[in-house]
Each structure stands twice: as C-alpha cells, then as structure tokens.
Length: 205
Image 1 (cartoon, rainbow, N blue to C red):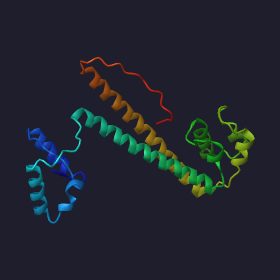
Image 2 (cartoon, rainbow, N blue to C red):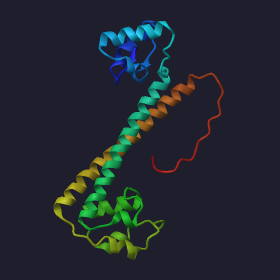
Image 3 (cartoon, rainbow, N blue to C red):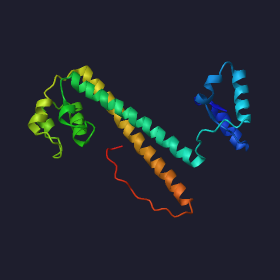
Image 4 (cartoon, rainbow, N blue to C red):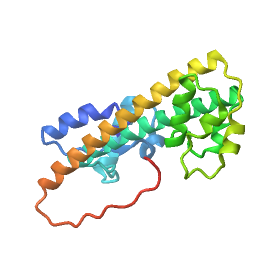
C-alpha cells in the first residue's frame, strides 16, 4: 500500500485484523514512477515482487494509542499558545505591555492581573501589587507598563480569548489523566521489571 495522507489507515487496519501482511510504502519511494493510478499500482506490485520495497515504521496498537493521545495533547497546547498570543495582542493594542514586564502572561502573576483587569480594576499600582515576589521587575516598572487605554472592544476580545485559553488548560489536564491511565494499564500488563525515573521538565507543558 502507498501511504498517502490518512486514506490508507482504515483499509490497513482491516487488512491487519484479517491477518494480512501489509507493506506500507512511502509515496516518495515510488513518486518517479507515477503516471496514472493503474500504472502506479503495477509499478508498486513489480517493485514488491523484486523485493525493492521496505515498509514504513508502523507502531503496535499500544504505542499507537499513546502517540494518538500525545499528538492530540500537542495540538491543544498549540491552540493554547495561539490564545496566549492573541491576549498579548489585545494588551499591545490597549498600550499595556504586560508581556514586557512578565515573561509569561499566563503564569500565576499574569493570570491574576488579567482577572483583575476583566473585573474592572484599572489602578496600575494595585495591578502591579498582584505580581509574585519571584517576578524580576519591580512593582514600579510593572505599574508603568500597565498604564493603558482600556478600550471596550479589546477588553471584550481579551475576555473571550482568556476563556478559550482556560478551556484548553482543562482539556490538557483531562488528556494528561487519560495518558497516565493508559500508561498505568500498560505497566500493569508488563511482566518485565523496568526502573522508571521521573525527569524534571522545564516549562508548564
């Protein structure tokens, strides 16, 4: 079979379930032979007969289930990143440079300030006081960056994007729980003894 997009997957799974040995061939290997679908099929059959085709890497069912979940997780994290960028854009348009004085506006300090702004707090000094003591900038510098022009339309957009961001965080937690459950199931069914070490990861994701 030729691996073209995701079209091969359904037929592949049916063939494997019925005990066929399937060789999945990257399209790059046979692209120089392509003319029509019929000629393409004949070329694939001829190359396979000569033993010139090697199958792509195809994970087993267990690995594929984890890959599917982690792929979905990556996609949701990318969505959250886009929402973060849109929140930063809203602040810039309101002449608030929260992203300049705080490295991550979706961290503890940033979220507190965003919530306060959405709850109609406009005093820059009070907003700056919400910063965690680990923030490197002084409260005076943070307050200077928060003297903005709070336009209603941008605040409305900020509120909507912030809600979408929070929803993606809930989804990520659910995916993490699903991955943990799946891994626990795999480990419990594994009779081999493997020492698992937890690695300290940098960054929230």
